[in-house]
Amino acid sequence: MPDGNGVDVMHAVRTASPSTAVILLTAYGTVPEAVQAIRSGACDYLMKPVSSDQLRSAVQRVMQQAGWGAGLDDGCEMVGRAPSLRRALERARVAAGTDADVLIEAESGTGKELLARYIHHMSDRSAKAFVAVNCSAVPEHLLESELFGHARGAFTGATAPKAGKFELADGGTLLLDEVAEMPLALQPKLLRALQEREFERLGETRSLRVNIRVIATTNVSLGAMVEQGKFRADLYYRLNVIPLSLPPLRERREDIAVLARSFAEKFAAQGRRPAQRLRPDFVARLESHDWRGNVRELHNFMRRVVALNQSAELGAECFDQEFAVAEQTVSMEPQKPRRSTVAPGTPMRCLERQLLEDTLGLTEGNRTRAAEILGVSVRTVRNKIRQYGLPPRRFA
Image (cartoon, rainbow, N blue to C red; front, side, top):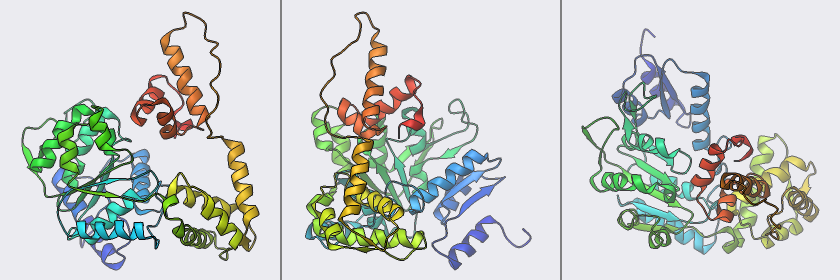
């Protein structure tokens, strides 16, 4: 370009349309330039040559973070009038006025990441980056690099230097999602980085300092994990400066109808159809259901109902029909244990693989549910799927 560069174009785009996401691609990038681009508003920064898989992954990450794609919290708006939710939001607003680290403990699907984004938005750091890392989604041997970055040649496959999430979040907020899945071996290094706001990239000895606010989320009790020896006590106390929680949807039933109508209007608009009216008997069914998956479950249910029912209104028959179909697809009720037919002398590896397959089959491939049934972490389930060569796309 004769009159500027990619960063100039990004600034022009962001000025004209602040909600537009920008991914920068460059042939001459360096780690400092990548960090500066992220701080300036880029969602991601890729160095050429870029494969189609790399570009696709980058676009999908941006879409999920923005709520445009199939992210788990896509469309799960934090709206409602329940006193318990209002208290949680007010506490979060007060916390946003400080630089203290925050620990959010709440059930899956309640909107923990949305609350973290709310804190960032309400804070003095809102103009800087909000950087999230899912501690349960990154393979254990790559998580340290994901957090702290690495130098070229730090390990096999490290063909270029990479800035970690700590570095990219400098000046802004770092979200440690599902922090309970953090490997014990990595927890001391994380503790030092949180205490000193200082770290080294893998393969380097030079320390880097950052100014960040850390928000951690978990759907289990970290205090209980500390008592069980599964999480370091000093790291728990370092994260738990300001504890926050979100009420499950079954404890704020007055918000169910508000959320359902909001979702129905959004999905109808996406499908370019008139909004469907929610009849009182449909709302009554919604409000009587426990929604163990919380707002996420309600969100996905409304998406399905709006998509499959073409009538101008939704009644109790629509609710009953969709739940009947769901129950036929997979029963989540505990089943009686089957009598073992394993022959004596069967290798333990075969038994473990069969147990894993049976449990994942019972949960329709839901790894989180399978982990709860087996009494292990989601990370263990994921690693076993890889170890036994099970088709990964069957199990989400």
